[in-house]
Image (cartoon, rainbow, N blue to C red):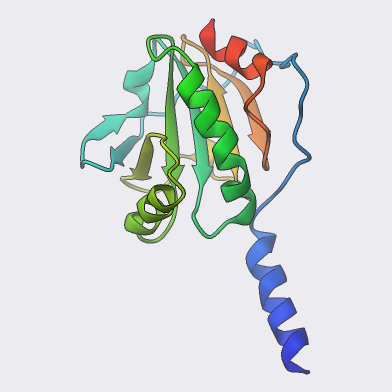
Amino acid sequence: MNKFTLIAGIALISLGSCKSNTPDSSEDIVVNVDASAPELPDFEVKDASGKVVNLKSLKGKNVLVNIWASWCPPCKAEMPSLASLYSSVDASKATFVMLAIDDDFMNSLQWLSEKNIKVPAYYPMGNLPELFNVQGIPATFIFNKDGKLIKKIDGAENYNTGGYKRLLSK
C-alpha cells in the first residue's frame, strides 16, 4: 500500500462520520406536526461561560439544536448559514443550541472564534440522549414552542432561507 492510498483511506474514514446534503434553497419548509413526536429532552448542556442549561427549560420558544464538531467539514460548511439565520431570528421567539461534540470544547470555541462565527455554542454535560444519537453529523433538530420535534435534518443544509426564518419566527 502506498502513502497516497493510506492517506486517502484515512481521510475517507474520518469523513465517513460526517454527512452532507445538497443545500435546499426551497422557501417552503415541510414540518412534522405529529402529536406523538419526540419532545425536547431533559438534558443539560454547558455554554462557553460555564452556564448550565437544561434543554427542557427552553420550551416556550422554537428551539434549533445543531450537533456539530470542528473537525467535520460539512459541519463547518453549513455554520455560516446557521450564523446568518441565528442573527436574523427574533430571540424572543427562537433559541439556538449549537451542540459541539469535539473531545475538547475549547477546539470548538477556537474554531468559531477564528472564523468570526457568532452562535451560541454548548457542550454536552453527559451522554447524548437517545434522540441525539445520530449516525453522522451535522444533524439538526427543530422543536416548536410546545417542545415537540417538528423537523430533523441529517447532513449539511443551507439555513439562510426565508423558509427557516419564517419557521423559527412563528
